[in-house]
Image 1 (cartoon, rainbow, N blue to C red):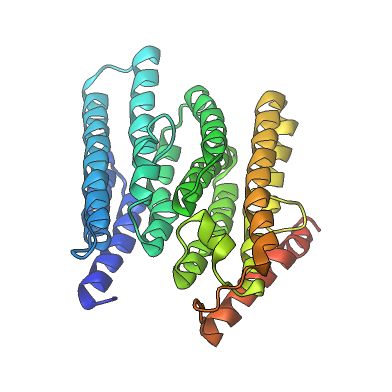
Image 2: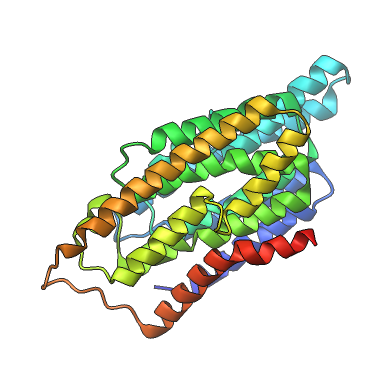
Length: 333
């Protein structure tokens, strides 16, 4: 239920990100991150659901550790004498605290665990909006060699961990970790490309909304439940777009990143990115292929009724996802 308290915390969540991003000092950035954390906790908690309360406590603890690390790093950074070694170390510390805040490898272990205990709408916020301020703060103090290593780790671990997942929330969490590798590479190339990628990635995350209105949390629900066939097709299209299959909109930002990596002779990184993207594609297709094959199972006592305005919205999003690639090619002319 959306009440006035939730709306209040939601607005604070929105403005705290703007405080972090527009601040002109590290302390201001830290204050913005803290307000963001304290406004997101009440949105996660639900007295009727112990899983939500446990997830919010875990989230609070991990984010507090990352904030302490960030504050420690910026205070040390102000006090020490600058030289190449210390500057490198400080940038790694600040980068690490930001990576921990957004659930990147090798600090990712909290992320799938917490996502598993949340509702779909909270998952949507955690996987999209909560990544914005740490990534922009990361761009202020990049350690390129360290982040190249982190990028590769992200795409590899996100892909390998997606295998044999029965929970859709965990699958989306590992997909988010995989996309974080792409987002980091986009951030290192240019902020415009990063903004394009995060906007498109957030657009594809409307899948969380799809799963929310159909009340689906696990893989077997896609197989057994008497879902509308068109709805399955929409989920399939969105999975293909999220994986980055060429005719769909999701391919466009990945194409630009790969193009840039190849132009700068980063062949090994681009090869790893392409291969992991293919494996993710295989995982998505395997899920949806099985789901579409099980269409013959009809459970008469279970019907999912979706309101017409929701169906129109889903139709529109899937249409944009399919035709977006064709429209996006006009950018090059």
